[in-house]
Image 1 (cartoon, rainbow, N blue to C red):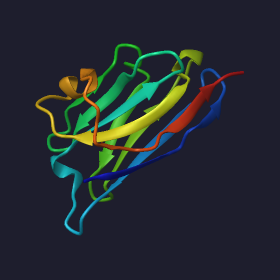
Image 2: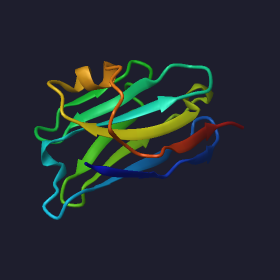
Image 3: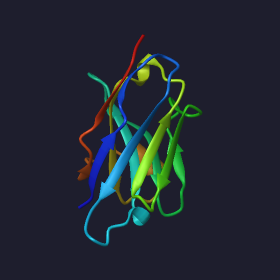
Length: 130
């Protein structure tokens, strides 16, 4: 089982930036190398949206159309942390963001999946408002 903890959320004005972190841990020999990590968000009354996913093995990434060009996912496998850099934030980006870890065939598959992830963090609130 992978334990995940998100941080970095907060209140930001439209056009601003935030960087979210997803710190992963597990057994003594744990490594993120073989996992897919996804950032998901859910706003009140809306379905979960797969924002961005990364294959930590080969570095391949996927972005939802709604964030493409504004968000960047990256990894630091030595520290077992995955980041989500969010720029040019809009009001519609307001949601609870959480990360999840799992094994998939492709990053697109993970981000568009409706699977209930066994390994996910508690979430961090991102509010974009003036």
